[in-house]
Amino acid sequence: MQSALNAPHLINEDAAFAYVEAKLWPHGATCPHCGVVGEASRAKGKTTRMGLWNCRACRKPFTVRMGTIFESSHVPLHVWLQAIYLICSSKKGISTRQIQRTLGGSMKTAWFLMHRIREAMSDGSLKPFGGGGGDVEADETYIGHDGNFSAKGGKNMNAVLSLVDRETGRLRSMVLDNVTSNAVTAAVSENVASDARLLTDSSNVYRRVGAVLAGHEAVNHSVGEYVRKNDPTVHTNTVEGTFSIFKRGMRGIYQHCAAKHLPRYLAEFDFRYSNRARLGIDDKTRADNALAGFVGKRLTYETVSQRRPADEIRIVW
Ligand SMILES: [Zn+2]
Image 1 (cartoon, rainbow, N blue to C red):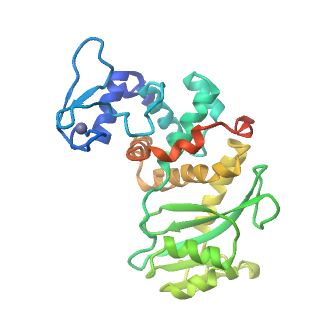
Image 2: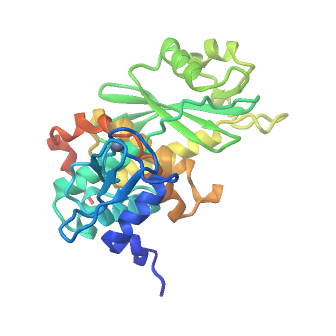
């Protein structure tokens, strides 16, 4: 039987380096010191560190781990690739405990790996949704510090606003301090093209931004309207469906999610949803797409790596 986990780059360190180099350096070895591309040669010698290159331009040594969040980690590269594969192929997510049991090592290492991978999954693209007159669904939900969800806010609840671009099938989610007209207007204007049509429920918070977009239709759930009768494209069922995947994952896997880490969990779910099988993306391609996100994501992780909050490892499984 050919297991996906038998791929050479997942079990062999040399193959892992070659794999990551090919993905992150499509135009040749790229020096992280001076930025020159394709002007480096492999360092030779028996005692040489794996994956070491020498830059002919600035004469400094480097590896593909340098300048990425793989840097300053003692975890072998093929173990990183295994972790990426596991996270990318688990539809509802995977617990830190499960990663630790599968890959070995300590809980602390597993926790670091997972948060770094989530960081890489965060959508750096600022391209607005719905460009070219497309439809964008928007809706909000609330997640409590205890992992419970509610359609209404309350004490110790974090508000999450999610947007789905119907055309591309992509999902983008963000944490809001308050679900007010001001906050929603700011978030939607930053992430939705002005020529888009916005699809929401009848909540007042979408009215102001809806009025400045090319179109805005709201279904009225309170009178039992979920799909507009004379225009079945008017509904928010897609974005509501993404909430149910996120909720199942958060309830089942990430029982205790510190509020400050919520954006990273959202990034993970957004990434998997935006790269889902229904869009023709298989597990391997999804893992490759995550790997591509490692480029240039170096400094953003420092706040997390400083210390591990105690509540983060109280995982129930
Ligand atoms: Zn250089």
